[in-house]
Length: 77
Image (cartoon, rainbow, N blue to C red):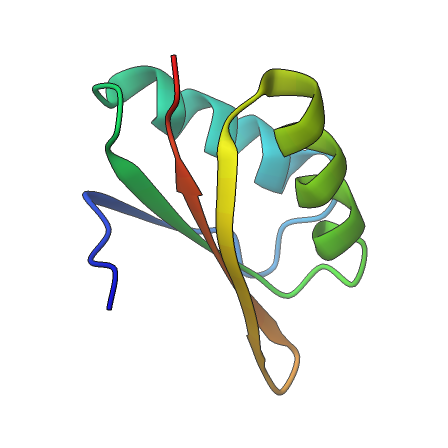
């Protein structure tokens, strides 16, 4: 099990805010630390996959509980 170093709640926020909040959180972390982001934006799964490819940060896990997505992202640089 992966325990995040930081958690952010983006429920109720829509594109691009979950990505903006994730980017801000990643900046505060040290390399190898993990952020957990929760979002109920239906576009967030595609957005997070695209963002992690563009930035090079590692998208470790995507899970969904009803309408809420949970993303775990490791800072890589």
